Length: 213
Image (tube, rainbow, N blue to C red; front, side, top):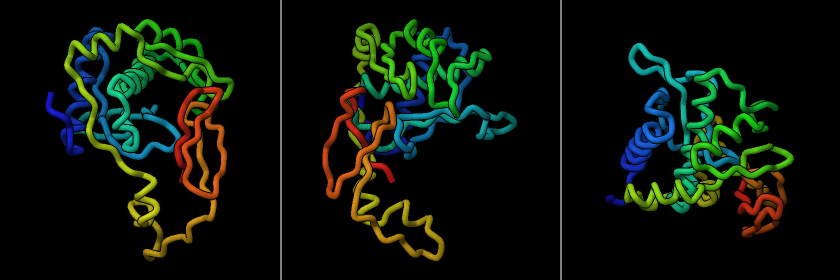
């Protein structure tokens, strides 16, 4: 498979992967969302509970993959995509799999994900949400010939250079940057602060913390 090096190709690849996963794990019955690649704060991806996009006469959910997480190992990117697809399935079937404003994943989510080749770990703050690809999913990905997405949004660099976030400040006036940086675990949302750029891992979740806005 040609490595995606443009956002259009990356989005096209995710749409193709969605269709393949839909056929394998949902019997092709999962409704198609609008797949986006945008910044997702403190998470690898998200889906919207409501159908926030209109496509012709149809309204669709949004499924987003974090732009700053695209260059992870392909098995992890696909596991995130499948994680969000499980949420969409539960929404479609009227199954409530989250509480606490959508952060805490209950056992309904765990069970629906486990039977679709995802390994789900527990965190006291976000429940059954920590996601890894099971060996069967890794083998399926290898069979498809899916490779790493060779692009990623440098969200740290974008902020330091006054990028996309600064463009939303009224009158073009950028905020003065703080002297400290806040790092957040994408799984349990535990945070730490540092006075310079660091690499820090959450010991509870075994996840690298990401720089928060």
